[in-house]
Length: 75
Image 1: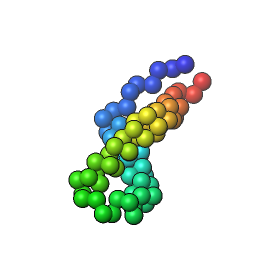
Image 2 (image 1 turned 60 degrees about the horizontal axis):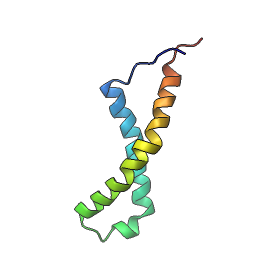
Image 3 (image 1 turned 90 degrees about the vertical axis):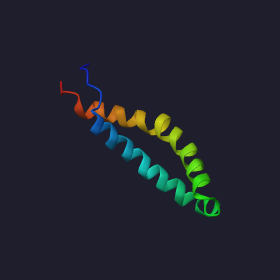
Image 4 (image 1 turned 135 degrees about the horizontal axis):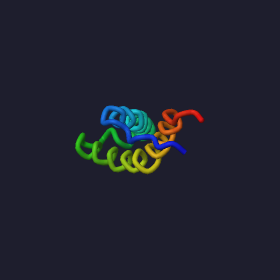
């Protein structure tokens, strides 16, 4: 198996955006009625507390594997 180098900072930024934007959008849509009465700071705290673990532990590992498959030289 060939080694794929770690992502560049630009690739990593794009990968994080690919995970964060849809996650925050989905959480906002799913919990809009519950989040609406909260202050902006509390709403941001709740969103970050829910979204960060989903992105880091749930989505990013799959995106790293996909990137490695796409960049690995064909045998």
